[in-house]
Image (cartoon, rainbow, N blue to C red; front, side, top):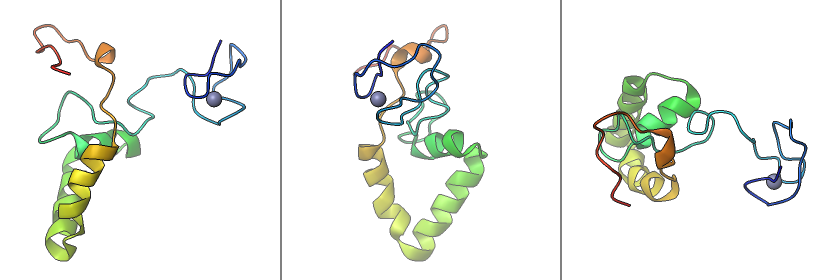
Amino acid sequence: MYCNYCGKVIQDDASHCAYCGKRIGGVIGRERLVRPRAGRKIAGVCAGFAEYLDLDVTLVRLVWLITAVMTGVGILSYPIAWIVMPEEPARLEAPAGYPAPTS
Ligand SMILES: [Zn+2]
C-alpha cells in the first residue's frame, strides 16, 4: 500500500510510514488532531483536543476558557487552532439524519 501523506510504498501491515513517520490506518479522528464534526460547540477545536488527548471535552473547554480569561492566550489561540486544525473527514461521521456537510 501507499502512504497517504508522502505517497511512498510501505508494508501492508505497517502502522507507521517508514519514510515520513505518519501513522497509517487505524481510526482517523481519534489519533489525529482534527476537529470532529459531531459534538462541537463552536468549531470543534476543544472537542478535537479532547479526543486527541483522550480527555473530557468539558475539561478541555474549562481549561481553555480559564486560560483565555486569565492570560488572553486562548482568545487568540482558538481562531488559530480553528484555521490550522483540519476538519475530520466526512466519511467517518455519517449518523442517520445528520445534516450533509456543506464543504
Ligand atoms: Zn509517508
